[in-house]
Image 1 (cartoon, one colour):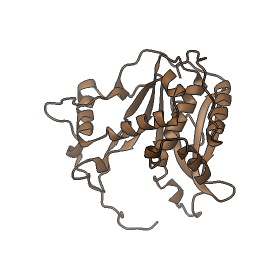
Image 2: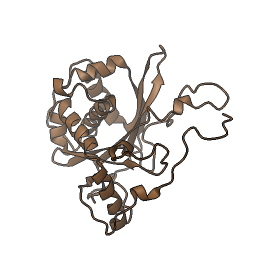
Image 3: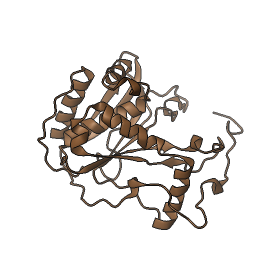
Length: 269
C-alpha cells in the first residue's frame, strides 16, 4: 500500500509469445480436440471442501512407487482427485477421460520470459486415459500421466500453441469428460492486505465455479481450525457421486484403497 512504483516493472514485449509466420502446429494439443458428447445437467450438485495437510499428503505419497514420491504436492493431489472423481462419476470404462492442468510456462523458455512480463503465459496440458484403466490401476498410474502432461510444456510447445490459436481461431479447451485443476497456492491471495490485516482465505467461495458446474477445482492455501497450514480443495459433484468420492478418498488416506470392480455406468461429466 502506498508504493509510488511497482515492485516489478511491467514488461510488454508481446512478440515473445506471438505466432510464427507462417504458423505451424508442431506438438500435440489434445486439450483442444473436438470430443463428441454432451454435458448432462444435474440439479442435485453438492459442494464440499477437503483439507490436505502434511498428514494427508504423506499418506498419499505412501501409495505411490518410490521413484514417484518426490513429485510435487500439486501433481499428487491432482492425480488423486482425477482418480477419485472418475470412480465417483462412474464413467464408461471404455471412454477416455481427461485431466487438464494449468501450467505457468514462463520458466520453460530459454532464456525465461522477463519477470515483469504480464501477458498470458499459461498452458492447459492434458492427460488422457481410459476410465477403466484409471480406476483399476493404483494412484501411481494417474500420477505418471499428470507428470508427463506437465512436462510436455516446453518452449516449442508454447510456440506451437500460439500457432494453433491463429490457425483454429482461439478454440476453447474441451470440457467433455474433462476436469481442470489449477494451483493457486502461490498466487498471493492470502497475502493481500486491504487495510484489515492478513487475509484468512483467498480463493473461490465454492468448487465447480464457471459456466459449467463441476468441471474445475483449485488448490488453495489455508489453515485449518488447529492453525495447521495446508491446502483446501473445493469440489462439486452430484450427491451420489460425492458419497462415492468421499468413501474412495477416505480409503486412500487411511492407506486402504478400495478394491475396484468393473461396475460402471455412462456419465458425461
